[in-house]
Length: 400
Image (cartoon, rainbow, N blue to C red):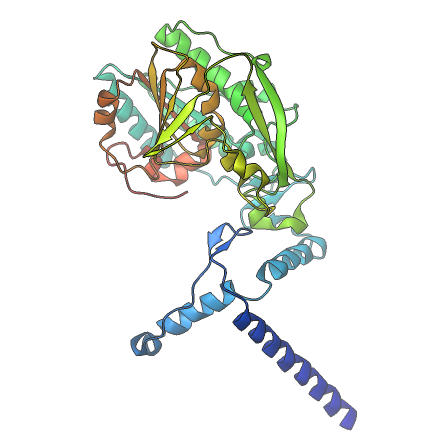
């Protein structure tokens, strides 16, 4: 009996000691603003008021704060994921499937016919509105990684990118000039560096093949004096530190077999570098190389393409004294794509309706002498983010 009591006492002492140790670590450790692993802001210590305490709001907010600022949080998140994967054989985390070959694949939920009809009709109405002022619209809805690798998903965790794209294209009117890039991407899927293992985006290489498909269509339709660039017109290099991307931030590194790196495409030959301008800021070149060597392995290095997402920016090509202007209405998939459009246009105006809060699009098109418009989103974001097709009332500021 005494032995049992001694053991119980020792366990109690260890338990209380652990709690107090973690509490002291929590007190002396500065709070973190951001979790790179989870790609989100962390809760701050709530201000105490009597009213919040009585209502229970203070307790709820403090629980969230303590959970977010828990000592060695990333360590525990990583090890929890490792146990789930190795012991319980978990191959689905959140909405991500962990494939045997190392790819992490975010599931695309099945869209209904009604949802496809709503999205398509928004694009149809926008294209008709632009046609009235003589501006053509090209709808280049892109298959993302999960769509192009849909056959990797198991029967118990299916993804519906292919079906959703079919539904959308069926509902688009000819006036929207739909461009389906699935076939050309499929021709190259056995090549390396098409899509990231751990990030939901595509590599510049896949974006290039899609560009060829899109630009070929525009050149023929607009009768442009242009030729689509060839793969050999660029120098292709893998640069920067290895990293874990957006899908990895959901699953943690213990579930990963591969790291990713950024592919940088450099146009060969002599030319004046393209320039970017957003607000009062500007930069020469379409890459922000500072993202390639950030210290944290979970850093969003896809932001090397154009520096990430902006509400509105303009790319200037001083190699063309005369030329056409294009407006690209986009999500982040366009960031690796726009560099290939740059040689063809005098100006590329890039608008992200998740963040844009400027003048009405029709007025913007007229004020900036836009010749035609490319709608470039991936198939998942265009369904789950209504602001991407809110052409009538941009500025809702959704972040997806």
